[in-house]
Image (cartoon, rainbow, N blue to C red; front, top):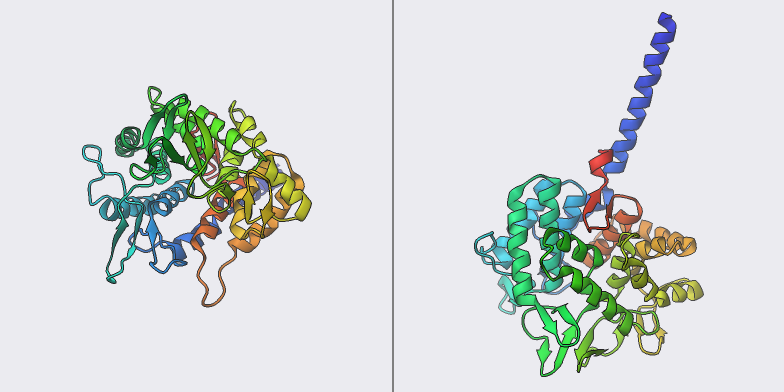
Length: 380
């Protein structure tokens, strides 16, 4: 009996140890650690070293906060938030007095560092509001939630307009996107999970209707199944953007990413994916995503960089496209590798790799209400 008991407990200890090791492996995120080490300064600034200005964008800060939340790294989350408050919002970023963050900060022409363009970017503002709502819920911190409400309220006030014949739509920023009867729009600024998450937190807001209008925009502006970088709304209908034309490239690649990450049970998820079938066809035919596409004709040119594979991995997963997902996984391994001597990781490559790789590896999900479900809640 004693021998049996000893063996039983020994087996139990081995099983527990194996489970602990597996959990630790699941919860360690090497690509995120590399991102923090190489792209995030000690003070919480996300640097895009591929630019001459060594710029920081509100987008980069917002993505960094999201990854920190997925990694359960509250210290880095707070560093990113505090840097954003101090440098992009001139210390006016609290529940009682909130200034939307400037979108671009870096080395100015006189050599000094500071805000280069004070206009906010609405996609970053949406992400930061979403990050704060989810941080308040997951980390049980009401201060984050209060700040999220204040930020979302300013987004509604300054960055959402009522377009005739459509209803609420997100401007890319408060200034510079409306001229006469033309309103310029960016389809990649409207991830469905974020809109669902904001609608869940603020049910009286425009978010649910905004999600419907964003789905309509993607469907109408992607006639060949390819999303454009920019679009326009004029005379009661969506149209080709007068400034950037009908090209789909580096901005648009995120449209496929967000579509792939949406909860499968969301009633808009499948129609959104179905509107974007062109990219799947391109990869099936050539083995790689095109760098640029004319969304009106479907004519494609160039080969997309590694970052495109990061964006497309969840898209292929949502479509149950095993070949496309296999190609994406192979390229993601190269994207997640430490940079060679003297070569820093490219900002956009890294963030799209974290979004896509983290999602297909099961590090996070979104439920039908847009709530973030990080794996650390169960595995860690």
